[in-house]
Amino acid sequence: MSDISILELLRITIPSTEELASGKASKFLDVLANSQDLTESLLYAHQPVSNNIIPIYSTSEKTIGKLDADVVNEQGFNIIDGPAIVVARKGYAGRLFVVRSERFIVHEDAYPIKPKSDYNEKINLDWFALHYNEEFQANRTSAWGIGDFPRTRFMNMKVVIPKIELQNDIADLYLRRKAKIEMIKEFETNVFSQMDEIILNKIDDNLVNNNV
Image 1 (cartoon, helix red, strand yellow):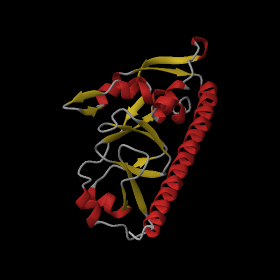
Image 2 (image 1 turned 45 degrees about the vertical axis):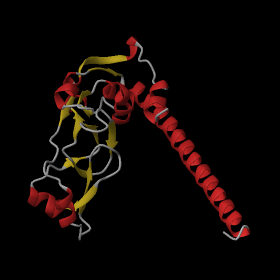
Image 3 (image 1 turned 180 degrees about the horizontal axis):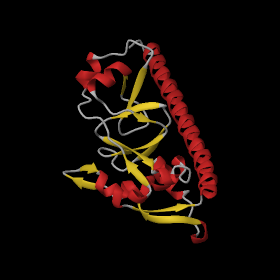
Image 4 (image 1 turned 135 degrees about the vertical axis):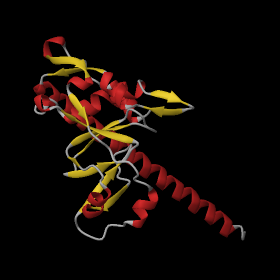
Protein backbone atom coordinates (compact mmCIF):
# COMPACT_ATOMS: atom_id res chain seq x y z
CA MET A 1 0.00 0.00 0.00
CA SER A 2 1.38 3.41 -0.97
CA ASP A 3 1.92 6.28 1.45
CA ILE A 4 -0.87 8.20 -0.28
CA SER A 5 -3.28 5.29 0.11
CA ILE A 6 -2.45 5.03 3.80
CA LEU A 7 -3.05 8.75 4.23
CA GLU A 8 -6.30 8.39 2.31
CA LEU A 9 -7.51 5.84 4.86
CA LEU A 10 -6.78 8.39 7.57
CA ARG A 11 -8.76 11.16 5.89
CA ILE A 12 -11.26 12.88 8.10
CA THR A 13 -14.79 13.68 6.92
CA ILE A 14 -15.63 17.36 7.23
CA PRO A 15 -18.94 17.89 9.07
CA SER A 16 -21.29 20.25 7.19
CA THR A 17 -21.49 22.40 10.32
CA GLU A 18 -17.75 23.05 10.02
CA GLU A 19 -17.84 24.15 6.37
CA LEU A 20 -16.59 27.63 5.66
CA ALA A 21 -17.19 27.51 1.90
CA SER A 22 -17.32 25.17 -1.07
CA GLY A 23 -17.00 25.47 -4.83
CA LYS A 24 -14.49 25.08 -7.63
CA ALA A 25 -10.81 25.25 -6.64
CA SER A 26 -10.42 28.35 -8.80
CA LYS A 27 -12.70 30.19 -6.36
CA PHE A 28 -10.16 29.81 -3.57
CA LEU A 29 -6.72 29.38 -5.15
CA ASP A 30 -4.68 31.01 -7.90
CA VAL A 31 -2.54 29.03 -10.33
CA LEU A 32 0.85 30.72 -10.69
CA ALA A 33 3.29 30.49 -13.59
CA ASN A 34 5.88 27.74 -13.71
CA SER A 35 9.18 28.04 -15.58
CA GLN A 36 9.63 26.72 -19.11
CA ASP A 37 12.90 25.56 -20.71
CA LEU A 38 14.46 24.33 -17.47
CA THR A 39 16.48 21.67 -19.27
CA GLU A 40 19.13 19.35 -17.88
CA SER A 41 21.73 20.97 -20.12
CA LEU A 42 20.87 24.42 -18.73
CA LEU A 43 21.17 23.19 -15.15
CA TYR A 44 24.48 21.50 -15.96
CA ALA A 45 25.82 24.63 -17.66
CA HIS A 46 24.86 26.88 -14.76
CA GLN A 47 26.10 25.16 -11.63
CA PRO A 48 25.57 27.46 -8.59
CA VAL A 49 28.63 29.50 -7.66
CA SER A 50 27.14 31.89 -5.11
CA ASN A 51 25.30 31.67 -1.81
CA ASN A 52 22.23 33.29 -3.35
CA ILE A 53 20.68 30.17 -4.84
CA ILE A 54 17.09 29.27 -5.67
CA PRO A 55 15.84 25.65 -5.52
CA ILE A 56 13.88 24.06 -8.35
CA TYR A 57 10.91 21.76 -7.79
CA SER A 58 9.10 19.48 -10.19
CA THR A 59 6.76 16.58 -9.37
CA SER A 60 8.06 15.62 -5.92
CA GLU A 61 9.24 17.17 -2.68
CA LYS A 62 12.86 16.59 -3.64
CA THR A 63 14.47 19.40 -5.59
CA ILE A 64 15.71 18.65 -9.09
CA GLY A 65 18.45 21.27 -8.89
CA LYS A 66 19.40 24.81 -7.93
CA LEU A 67 20.33 27.96 -9.78
CA ASP A 68 21.99 31.19 -8.80
CA ALA A 69 19.44 33.99 -8.43
CA ASP A 70 21.30 35.99 -11.10
CA VAL A 71 20.85 33.15 -13.60
CA VAL A 72 17.16 32.81 -12.71
CA ASN A 73 16.65 36.51 -13.38
CA GLU A 74 18.67 36.43 -16.60
CA GLN A 75 16.64 33.49 -17.92
CA GLY A 76 13.38 35.13 -16.92
CA PHE A 77 12.21 32.21 -14.78
CA ASN A 78 9.25 32.90 -12.51
CA ILE A 79 10.22 33.07 -8.83
CA ILE A 80 7.58 31.88 -6.37
CA ASP A 81 7.46 33.31 -2.87
CA GLY A 82 6.86 30.44 -0.47
CA PRO A 83 5.20 28.80 1.17
CA ALA A 84 3.02 27.47 -1.63
CA ILE A 85 1.55 24.21 -2.89
CA VAL A 86 3.03 22.54 -5.96
CA VAL A 87 0.76 20.40 -8.15
CA ALA A 88 2.37 17.71 -10.29
CA ARG A 89 1.07 17.98 -13.85
CA LYS A 90 2.87 14.97 -15.33
CA GLY A 91 4.24 11.73 -13.96
CA TYR A 92 2.75 11.72 -10.48
CA ALA A 93 -0.08 13.80 -11.94
CA GLY A 94 -2.32 15.39 -9.33
CA ARG A 95 0.16 14.97 -6.49
CA LEU A 96 0.14 17.92 -4.09
CA PHE A 97 2.93 18.94 -1.75
CA VAL A 98 3.89 22.04 0.20
CA VAL A 99 7.14 23.90 -0.49
CA ARG A 100 8.27 26.10 2.39
CA SER A 101 11.30 27.64 0.71
CA GLU A 102 11.33 31.42 0.86
CA ARG A 103 11.90 31.56 -2.91
CA PHE A 104 11.77 28.78 -5.48
CA ILE A 105 10.95 28.03 -9.10
CA VAL A 106 8.80 25.27 -10.57
CA HIS A 107 9.59 23.07 -13.57
CA GLU A 108 7.04 22.90 -16.40
CA ASP A 109 5.99 19.39 -15.33
CA ALA A 110 4.23 20.99 -12.34
CA TYR A 111 2.65 24.28 -11.34
CA PRO A 112 2.39 26.25 -8.09
CA ILE A 113 -0.83 27.34 -6.44
CA LYS A 114 -1.52 29.77 -3.61
CA PRO A 115 -4.69 30.93 -1.83
CA LYS A 116 -6.37 34.01 -3.21
CA SER A 117 -5.94 37.10 -1.05
CA ASP A 118 -9.40 36.68 0.49
CA TYR A 119 -8.50 33.15 1.60
CA ASN A 120 -4.84 33.61 2.46
CA GLU A 121 -5.55 33.27 6.18
CA LYS A 122 -8.38 30.81 5.71
CA ILE A 123 -6.58 27.88 4.06
CA ASN A 124 -3.96 25.74 5.77
CA LEU A 125 -1.65 24.61 2.96
CA ASP A 126 -0.67 21.37 4.72
CA TRP A 127 -4.31 20.46 5.25
CA PHE A 128 -5.26 21.19 1.63
CA ALA A 129 -2.33 19.27 0.14
CA LEU A 130 -2.81 16.20 2.32
CA HIS A 131 -6.59 16.19 2.26
CA TYR A 132 -6.97 16.44 -1.53
CA ASN A 133 -3.87 14.53 -2.63
CA GLU A 134 -5.61 11.24 -3.33
CA GLU A 135 -8.72 12.79 -4.88
CA PHE A 136 -6.76 14.93 -7.31
CA GLN A 137 -4.57 12.03 -8.41
CA ALA A 138 -7.68 9.92 -8.97
CA ASN A 139 -8.98 12.62 -11.33
CA ARG A 140 -5.95 12.90 -13.57
CA THR A 141 -6.30 12.23 -17.26
CA SER A 142 -4.29 9.57 -19.04
CA ALA A 143 -3.01 9.63 -22.61
CA TRP A 144 -0.84 6.80 -23.91
CA GLY A 145 -0.30 5.66 -20.34
CA ILE A 146 1.05 9.04 -19.23
CA GLY A 147 -0.82 10.78 -16.41
CA ASP A 148 -1.71 14.44 -16.74
CA PHE A 149 -3.40 16.89 -14.39
CA PRO A 150 -3.64 20.20 -16.29
CA ARG A 151 -4.46 23.55 -14.74
CA THR A 152 -7.96 23.52 -16.20
CA ARG A 153 -8.76 20.25 -14.44
CA PHE A 154 -7.43 21.58 -11.12
CA MET A 155 -9.41 24.80 -11.44
CA ASN A 156 -12.65 22.86 -11.99
CA MET A 157 -12.20 20.44 -9.09
CA LYS A 158 -14.84 20.90 -6.41
CA VAL A 159 -13.41 21.46 -2.93
CA VAL A 160 -14.83 22.03 0.51
CA ILE A 161 -13.01 24.45 2.79
CA PRO A 162 -13.72 23.97 6.50
CA LYS A 163 -13.13 26.54 9.21
CA ILE A 164 -9.42 27.26 9.71
CA GLU A 165 -9.45 25.92 13.28
CA LEU A 166 -10.57 22.52 12.04
CA GLN A 167 -8.04 22.64 9.18
CA ASN A 168 -5.24 23.31 11.66
CA ASP A 169 -6.31 20.41 13.88
CA ILE A 170 -6.62 18.01 10.93
CA ALA A 171 -3.29 19.14 9.42
CA ASP A 172 -1.55 18.51 12.73
CA LEU A 173 -3.03 15.01 12.87
CA TYR A 174 -2.13 14.29 9.21
CA LEU A 175 1.46 15.47 9.68
CA ARG A 176 1.97 13.43 12.84
CA ARG A 177 0.60 10.33 11.11
CA LYS A 178 2.68 11.01 8.02
CA ALA A 179 5.78 11.30 10.24
CA LYS A 180 4.97 7.91 11.77
CA ILE A 181 4.61 6.40 8.28
CA GLU A 182 8.03 7.80 7.35
CA MET A 183 9.53 6.33 10.54
CA ILE A 184 8.06 2.91 9.68
CA LYS A 185 9.45 3.14 6.14
CA GLU A 186 12.88 4.08 7.43
CA PHE A 187 12.78 1.21 9.94
CA GLU A 188 11.80 -1.26 7.20
CA THR A 189 14.58 0.02 4.94
CA ASN A 190 17.15 -0.38 7.70
CA VAL A 191 15.93 -3.87 8.59
CA PHE A 192 16.04 -5.10 4.97
CA SER A 193 19.45 -3.50 4.48
CA GLN A 194 20.80 -5.32 7.53
CA MET A 195 19.24 -8.59 6.35
CA ASP A 196 20.89 -8.18 2.94
CA GLU A 197 24.24 -7.55 4.58
CA ILE A 198 23.89 -10.64 6.81
CA ILE A 199 22.95 -12.82 3.82
CA LEU A 200 25.85 -11.51 1.70
CA ASN A 201 28.31 -12.07 4.56
CA LYS A 202 26.98 -15.58 5.01
CA ILE A 203 27.45 -16.29 1.30
CA ASP A 204 31.00 -14.91 1.44
CA ASP A 205 31.80 -17.11 4.44
CA ASN A 206 30.48 -20.19 2.66
CA LEU A 207 32.54 -19.42 -0.42
CA VAL A 208 35.69 -19.00 1.67
CA ASN A 209 35.03 -22.17 3.66
CA ASN A 210 34.49 -24.12 0.48
CA ASN A 211 37.61 -22.61 -1.15
CA VAL A 212 35.56 -21.24 -4.02
